[in-house]
Amino acid sequence: MTQEQSQILDEVRVNLVFEHMIVSVLTGAFAGAALVFLFALFGVLSHGGFSLYFLLTAVLKTMLAGFLIFLVGFFASVVVLTPLHRVLEKSRRRHVWPYAAAIVGVAAAGLAGMKVLPLVGGLDLSSVVAVLTSSLVTAFEFGRRMRPVWRAADRAGLAENNIDKHLIH
Image (cartoon, rainbow, N blue to C red; front, side):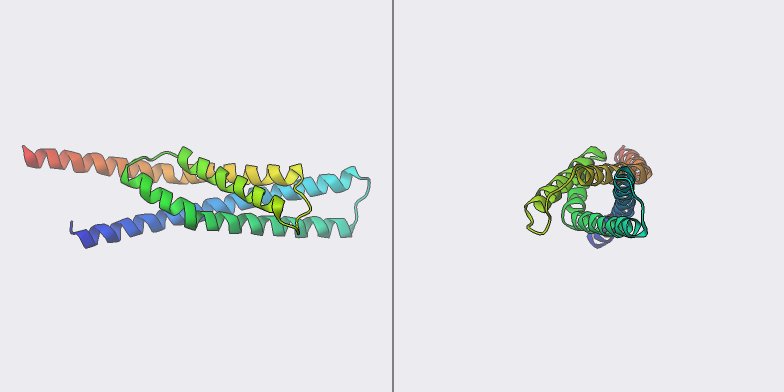
């Protein structure tokens, strides 16, 4: 295989991994938004009243949380996870834990950044739980989606090594 073909194949692999990352981020954003909605709904019901205003507020808060979680996850996929994949793939380390650590690290950094913003009055426990849960869901979903890809890459590497051994002998 020529150098140019190898580079094209590597780019295709990175694009495939990026697509899996984005789908995982969408899944995590949905999970985080669902938690935000459940916490908001529980808060409304625990304070004794239910009205259309509180339901609309909960829906808007849910949509905003899901959108923000997705934006942070997309940014993390481009800036952190794709370069991390390139490094890990060169060393043939195919495990989910480095990605999970990076995702949780980005979530923690995002929460720390949100805490210092003047427009955000303060983060409540439900927001922290929703963000950290969404990051864990994202990491596990990414691992679930990548497991067959990693197995296929391992099998291809073994087959390539067997071919090389037969050609040498």
